Length: 219
Image 1 (tube, helix red, strand yellow):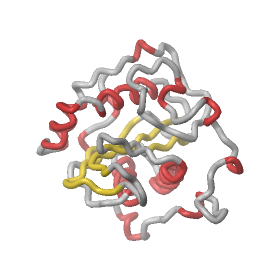
Image 2 (tube, rainbow, N blue to C red):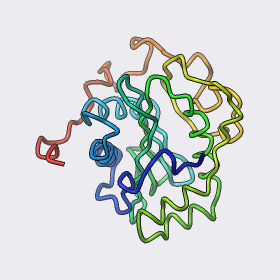
Image 3 (cartoon, helix red, strand yellow):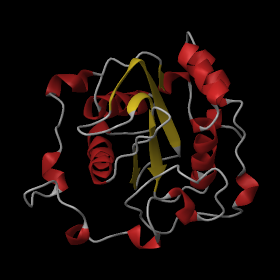
């Protein structure tokens, strides 16, 4: 099993049109819907954006890993977007981003941790990252993903039983338990809404979602 088993050429956007987190997540949500992995892009978009507001997933390697876990998703998958130039992932972010992985995670996805571990190893492989940057087509990028073998045997029979509020690839490359790929401690699982940080001035994060214009739905 490789990273390529969780995506396909139609989920790879080799030239992102967007240059900010909100728009990039929207662009990749539409790709997931077009390929049949998300039936309705809008709830998925809201969930992914809320999570990103709570805890940004940008990394020093110039990558970001927004994600959403929703009931009703058929299978674990990711859409990938590559920008022709680096851009700021969000206000105050110090790491310019050029590559974005948007993960669609079912309520119970037994290969979630191996996938995260594989993405972590990719983020530390400068040779493969350079090949992705220089790839001329989605198929070329997919070929690179085929070179990252997933260590499924490291977590036999594992399946997530709890919702998590954070996501991080730091230290996940050799993860042996479900908390290794999450930001913070096990206490970060399933925090009640009232315990989560607000968007400022006491405004709940949900109200800060910027829904794209209706015209976008024609995709």
